[in-house]
Image (cartoon, rainbow, N blue to C red; front, side, top):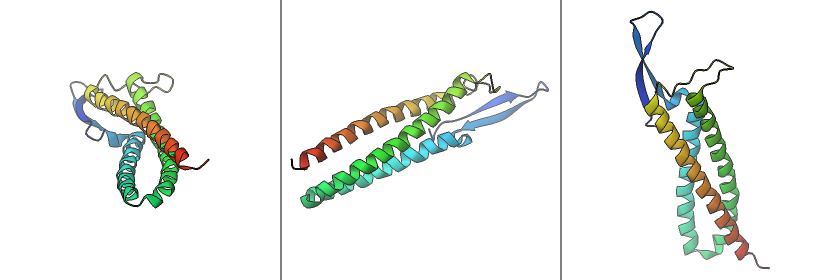
Length: 148
């Protein structure tokens, strides 16, 4: 998403003039939120990996860490899902436009930029599915550690 940038010549009403106009992810708050949410999720995964390695060295803290991880993982899943939804909504408007509000589609002009966006949103969706599976794994690990 961050590397997606494209500059095209856009015709203005007085031919034969054309002006260069670039499109990048910072043009939309939804795309900025997408990048920020996945950056936070990536940083959190690094921190949890380090803490999980520490918990292997000191097993007494493992149950507490896993319970905290499950709660924060679910919170991050909500943030990541909201980011995917926001970026997907803006991307869909860029792809199809909206005739009711007179927003024209831009993916016919910025084709490479839209391909970068689509790839980023698809990768984000796959990452969120993996996050759901990891949350389920953490939950089942925690439930096995609780005595019955």
